[in-house]
Image (cartoon, rainbow, N blue to C red; front, side):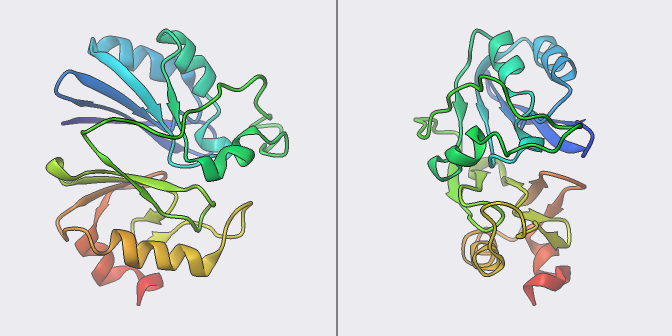
Length: 199
């Protein structure tokens, strides 16, 4: 696995462009579409799909431009975040205007490289992408380095978030490297030891 972290948009979202063998995945293209497109083209790999950890505007703003740049590649989003993704209220003007004619996402995949782990709490349809063979988890805004995602945004719930982290993420191998939606990477073991929200 080869992982490229592109920090995009005004809220500095981690967009990940990663390759597994000859396949390329794009996780959370939240802005700076030309930056993402340029990086993907330079890698000269088959682009499989765009993977969205959740539907908040700062993680989806460049979806349409990136999808169209690569022959309308499919966009995965958990069905519980579809209404959020499509909502005109899903915006932070002026830095993140509402999407215009958004790409219709799919809610299932046949990929074998990773597992989709539903981790509601930050939003109803938040998910993590777990590449077990590589020991890597992309956690979106569910889990950060020694912190957790907000639960006061649309679709959020604090108790649900904590439950998701403890029962779905903390049970993974302790050496798993966690790549979050914002900020530096971490490990499951580090979060078990030092995350104050999980005590």
